[in-house]
Amino acid sequence: MSGMHSNNIIVQGDRYTGKTYLIRRIIERFGNSMRLAGFFSWKSADHTVRFRAWDNFELMEHGPTEILYREDDQIIRQQVFEELGVRSIEHAMERSELMVFDELGRFEASCEGFKEAIRKALAHETPVIAALKSETNPFLDFLREREDVSLFTITLSTREEVFGKAADRLDEILQVR
Image 1 (cartoon, rainbow, N blue to C red):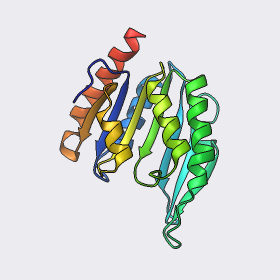
Image 2 (cartoon, rainbow, N blue to C red; image 1 turned 180 degrees about the horizontal axis):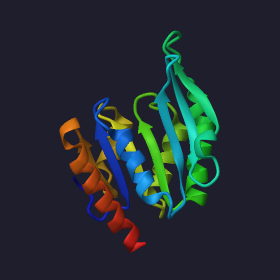
Image 3 (cartoon, one colour; image 1 turned 30 degrees about the vertical axis):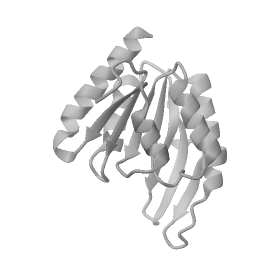
Image 4 (cartoon, rainbow, N blue to C red; image 1 turned 180 degrees about the vertical axis):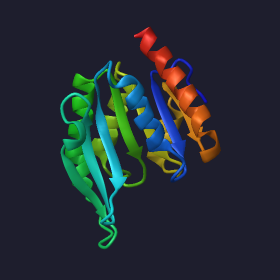
């Protein structure tokens, strides 16, 4: 873990290690007492990857949702990142006390507007908690190396330990604010 003077938390790990599980537990822990906003992406039963803008006080589970990727056509819909993605990040910077980004990976590698919005969010006074795929690319590596990030690596065997450390770190960040 680096970035003890950070304002942001990034959890990285392989598929199915519990990154989203950890972020959802953070939301359960802090979401009743503060405004949270950001986005989620997930693979649905119809073999599509979907992107949802999210706000715990307004959008709930009914936020705007768009398809990012269909396995059958192998086309990444980059405009989803550049439009709905950027709007969800801007909304989170304007309205939230904690920004939640789940998850960042390879799909957005060539989405310059989206990547710039993520950079601005991490530099913003509002803390960020984000999940990253364990893969490497210039954007993800840049995020991991930022001085304003506390980086946690999660595995199935360390999931509970990492949750405790990430939640404690978020408590510290929020107390300083």
